[in-house]
Each structure stands twice: as C-alpha cells, then as structure tokens.
Image 1 (cartoon, rainbow, N blue to C red):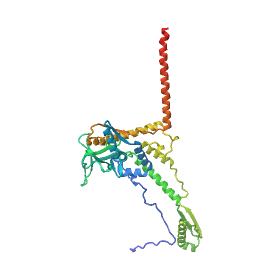
Image 2 (cartoon, one colour):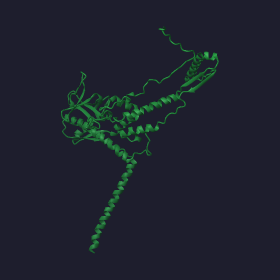
Image 3 (cartoon, one colour):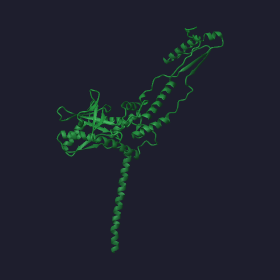
Image 4 (cartoon, rainbow, N blue to C red):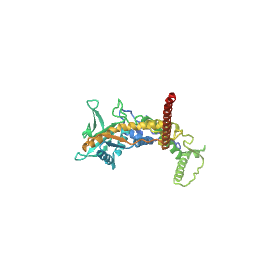
Length: 400
C-alpha cells in the first residue's frame, strides 16, 4: 500500500507561465463603495472634487461670482466704522476681511451643504476679534423642543456630541434645505454615480495609453522536430529571455541593441490588435450632467459645446438668479455679524447688507441696448409731442 505519495516531477521543457491582472485599485476608490445617506460623507465629496477638476472649478467660480459684500448704515459715523471693521477683521490663516471669511464659508456650504462659523470676541468682550470658519463635518445639528429651535453640537472629551457653548456667537447657514433635510444638502449630492463612471473611463484611458506607449512583447520559441532541439527547449528559452531583457534594458537607457535568435522565434506586441474605444461621447454626456447641476455655463469652464462663445441673455439671467439665491442664503449670517458689532459699540441704527453688482453682460451689447432704449425713448417723446399738437389743433378747427 502506497501511503507516502511522491510529488509528480515537472517535465523538462514544459514551461507554462500565467499572467493575471494587478490587484491595484484605481484612484478615488471611495466612489465605488458609495452608499447614499441622508447626510453626505465628507470624504466622498472631497474625493469627487479632487477626482473631477470641472467640479472643483465650478465651485470656485460660484464663489467668485457671488462677489464682495459690505454694509450700509443710516448713521455716517457708524457706516464708516462698520466698513472699516468688515475690511480689517481677522479671519485666520493670514487673511483679513469679511470677504475672505465668506470664501471659506461658501466653500463649506456648497460642498457639505452647511456653512459653520464663529464670532470670536476679544478678552474684554468689547470687540469681535475674529471671524472663523469651522469644519462642517465635525458639527452636528440637534433639534430643540420647538420647530424653530436647534443647537450646534460637537464631540466633547468623552466622545459624545454635546451642544457647543455660546450658541449666540455661532453662525450656521444651510444650503438648499429640504423637508427631509432641513439642515441643507450638498451641491455634489447627485454626482457620485456619474463621477464613478467618469473615473472608470479616465482610468481605463490611462491604462490603455500606458499599454500603447509602453508596449509588452510576447517572445515565442517553437522548437524543431529533432530530439536534440526538444531537449534543449528549456535552455534555449532561458537564453532568449535573458537576451531579450538585455535588449529592452539597453533601449530604455537610450541605446540601440539588436536581438539575434536562431530557430523559429516569433515576436508579437501584446494587445496591438485591440482598438481604444472612443470616449468623447460618453465623457461629454457625463460632463453635461455634472455641469448642469452646478448652473455654470459650459463655455466659462473651457468647454466649447455650443456654436457661440458669448453668453446669451437667458444664460446670464439664469446665472444671476443662481448667484442671487446663494447670496440670499448667506445674507443673514453677515447681518448677524454687523448687528453684533454695532450693538457692542453702542450704535442703535439698523444696517443693510449690500452685495457687489453681478455684471455678466458684454459691454458692447450693453451699450447697444442702452442706445436702443434711448432711441425708443426719443421716438416716444416725439410721438407724445405730435399727439399733443394734433389734439390742440383739433378744437381750433372746430371753433372756426
């Protein structure tokens, strides 16, 4: 009885080699494991913004198009002092001014659906020393007893979320609040699925171009029918592999080295017969969906999809409406800062937040429109004068 089985010895010359795909995952793999939640994940939205430059550019353009802000008061002295405060207030990280604070605030509000800030008082509690923007992913919102009551909470030393002190000094702005999400939703909420597809397409393009630019070769040696050649097949294969590797190494270093072999040797390029798929149509369809979600016209991002490069009146009006809605959401936070500063300095006058004008029109088209309006006004005045003269002449003729 054969208890101890001996291992079967491999046959000489039978060198079988298998090659499999690498297990390396593509970049931004968080998009593959996305699970839609009621409140977006910060890491997911950061991965989307980092993976797709168009989305990152859209967010920055929205922030820039919102423009600057200032405040006006009825009291001239309070107006001058308040403007100086808004221009010089410290916002951290070497930046000053309420506009620098709003850049960070809007960035957090658009990407995470919530803008969180804090008014930091001085040591004597008589001045607003700084305006700081917080991390929205570190803050949770807890509803109060009434529908208008809520509190901002953060993790304490024990690892539990507790209400933050001095809620009256905290700033909070939701972006596009909905019934099931009253504390805002991210601008990137509906983008994970499309960005996942876009990432796969771009990753496949990169792999294909790497294969086409850094080709792989298959060197096949077919031994003859003789007994001696079949016996030396393994040794001959080892020599061919060694010489081929030397030739490839010399090519990488910039020199040219010929490869000479004896016998039936066939050299092929792996994957040379495969064609790269045309990706322009699916990429454009995906980018159209992503850009339409942001509300930015495509040509402002360098995407020449339309026949004209000028912004039409309809696109200008729509974009102005989007920027006005974002301004309307942020205005209460700026008003709270201005009111607190005025009360701390003894001013009882109200203030009004004033935003810079959004000018997206072509200056030449604006000049033509103004000229047409003036012509229309001139013709209207001439018609009115003519009608008055005719009306005054009619009674005189009837009297005669």
